[in-house]
Image 1 (tube, rainbow, N blue to C red):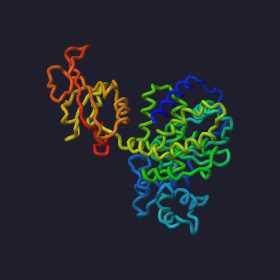
Image 2: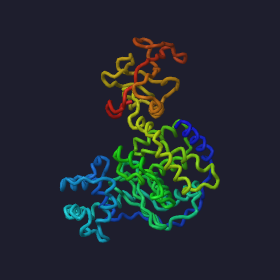
Image 3: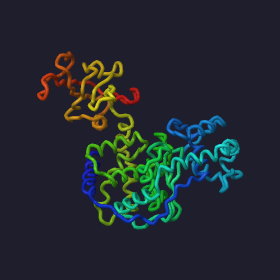
Image 4: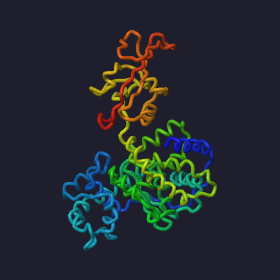
Amino acid sequence: MRNLLASFLIMVFLFAGCSGATRPIDTEVTLDPDWNDLKVGLLLASYGGWDTGRLESFEYYVRNLGVITNQVLYSTDRSDLTNSIDIVGNPVPDSRFESLLNLTDETLDMFRDKAIATSQHSLELLDADNIKTRITKLNDKLRVKNNFERINIQIDPSLAPGLTRVSVDGNSAEIFIHTEVTYEYVEQGYIAALLMRESKKEDFDLTQIEKLTKQYGTALSGWEQFLSDFAYALQLWCGAELDPDMMTYLVYSSVKFNHIFSAQLSHWAGNFMQFKDMSLKELVPYGIEDASNPIYERLLVRLVDPARIGIVIDDESENLIISGFVKETPAEISGLMVGDQIVRLDTEDINQRWMLERKLYDKDPNSYVILKVRRDVNLPTDGAVSILVDERDPDFNLLSFQFLLSRAENLPEGVY
């Protein structure tokens, strides 16, 4: 995996300086919510067990729908749910979800105008001309010559933050983004639409991919998850002008933002352009193969439940200042103190949160780590395995402490 990421990062810098096309595409870009699609998203969000706290302005509708029935929906139900609604929004007789739609239709009809207005209000944060300019640059970077004739962007309340979903019909695409509207989500959705247009899921064995999406309870099917994650990796690469460590951190930490496969797919996202004749269509099989590699499952386990020290970092400081500990963790009894400034993890100097988290992704829980901190010379040094005077400031010592790392799952949220 490290070799894959190394190759990816090298290619990032080789292509970071490439200039994009300057003439915007002639694709028609619309921001037009469709009530049937929005209805499906609301139902899945309500009966799919999603965390309503992430829904922002749609939370009210989802909560009210949720009290009507004890129905449970899964990501695999999306297609049948969509097919259970006719073109004018009524339940299709004898369809799989006719009874659910009959139960919820009265409530959904009450929400219709307000829900559509809420979606339109969110989409107003986007500008169609700006989207065209961004898509033009992506086309240039990805060597796409056949533009979509029409792209429509919608809100999907059932999407987890970070994920996008697409539907492609010939040379038209629907891009569904999270309620937290950003241009980055639109770009990811556009790339996912390109990948879908160039590939058919029936051509691939998605067994391992479907297994992992079910295991980690995603709101998307395996194919949709693959497209969203691959699009994220490609979008990162297309705009990459970042420090290599930062790029690796973004790839690893994307698991926190519901991207299950991006850490592995970044390999092909960063390297396919070295093959002069390689297209997105030719790229997808390699991505499927990588995402299906059973070896990746072991890394994914570590990324989902990474190693943690058991400390709280001071939010108000620009440095890594320890402001608290999780009780009875190895870090608490090691000799570390509140007010210590972290300066090194094992052999790596660190001074920002993302650096600390990036290094911890490479560690295994229950493995030993050496943490070096900066502390006033007048304070105790109990437990330190080494003590040096800070050459830059003799009023401070540099102390090293060794202890076992904990699992993130066993610690409160937000703890490092």
